[in-house]
Length: 205
Image 1 (cartoon, rainbow, N blue to C red):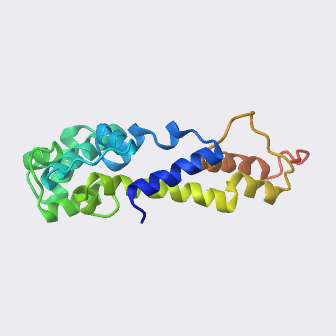
Image 2 (image 1 turned 135 degrees about the vertical axis):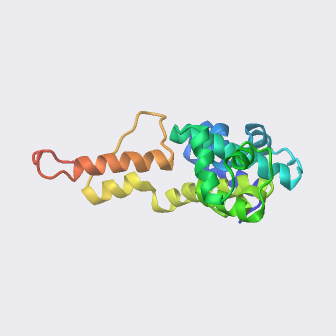
Image 3 (image 1 turned 30 degrees about the horizontal axis):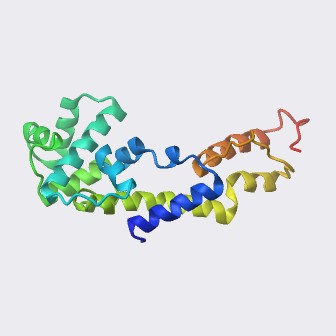
C-alpha cells in the first residue's frame, strides 16, 4: 500500500483529470464514519498535517465509542439493548459493556476481537489500534482503487452502453459522476433497458 501522502496525491490527480467533486469523494464526515476517526483528525490528515501520536489506549477507546454511536444511529436501537447484546456476546456484565462502549474502559484483546466482529469492521483489532494515518490511508486506498478501476474499465456506464448498443450517453454539461454514482445509475438503467418485455417498443439509441 502507498503512503498516505502518495495516496492523496494520486486521488487528487484523478479528481482533476476526471473533474470530479472533491468534497464528495473526500467528505470528512463520511470518512470519519467509515474509519471511526474524529472529524478533526481526518481533516488534519487530508490537509497534510503531521499525525498526532496518541497512546494506543486512547485510540482504542475513542474508536469503540465512535462505532457504538454510529451503530445506534444506523440501527435505531436503544443504548441499553445494545449493551445487553454486547454483554452476552462478550460474556460480561451489561454495566461493563456500557463502560466499554462509552469509551470509559479499555477492552482486553479478546473483547476487542469480539467487538470488531460485532461491529463488522475489517482488519480486526488493527482497526482500533493502528495509527490514524494508517486507518485513513486504508480507506483512501479503497477510494483510489475505485477511481483507477473506473479509468481502466472506462466505467460502468460505458460498459452498460456497450452491452445495449447505446450510441450516446449525455450528461448535463459540466456534470461528472463519481464511480459510485455511475454504478448506481448503471444499475437503474440496466433495469430499464433489460425489461421483461413490457415496453418492447422502446429502444436505446
